[in-house]
Image (cartoon, rainbow, N blue to C red; front, side):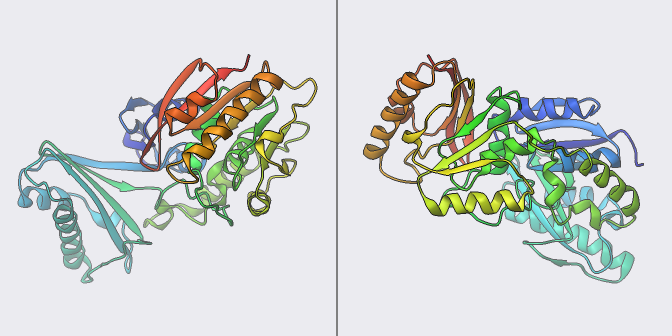
Length: 378
């Protein structure tokens, strides 16, 4: 099913490379190697399908087509034309090019993207007699060109769009957490997928849903309409459908495991319930209550995994400082023995909690530098 030595690169948000590497290890991806911004690995077509369906922290899965020297526009054009683009773009299909350039003679990304597009379009016009058009929003094929120190890496996006777009989100709050980052936060928290998990600032429910999908073995890609590889000429739809159905059959109910979300805003609670329903998840408890009203359940040794507001996006810092101080006091007084994983983009607010983190993990949330603070509450 395709060459097993194809070179693939799964991209992720900064700081999530170790989590993504572990996900690929579980998939038995050959030659998985952690790099800045993602993980490089080898695989056949089946692994491309499985990676897109199963990976929780990957943003895209790129299939590398080649690397070549690129000091000028002509070398770029020839390198792109060395690929037979009929393998990836069907008649009548559209394309888009994502290009990035750093420390190279060709330093204008928009010009690089235009030259890549010209090379593909010219080749297909000569071979098919048609000129593919550009569709930046929903292309049939998305091409990726990374230029660094006059070396080009040419790839196609097998995902066909960011994998954070799971397909289940109906309702969205003011500052929703990216699904891939939420999945990474849950996995970095150390949660065992059996103990109770609480998000007292649940917003529209992203952490709750990602946690529940982990607990229920629901692959995150099952709700997407399609992936980019499904539009490639020669795609084996029957084999892919069989794999997708087999992965879907692995789903199990949440059962007696407890996942609880809270938010003071009734609109956010409704959004969470709507998204849970869309994601096919039953058994998650969602309460309309402020985080400071959280009452630990007797006998729980729970994980609190949460993303409170931290000022850059929502609210003012003075109000939030008081919120963090009170929330930290609540945890120290009533939640001794709990595990806390809190995503924060404001060091002053994090300090106001009054808790000593066991670990600080640098991450990024929508381009904003932040930290995941992990600690045992005591």
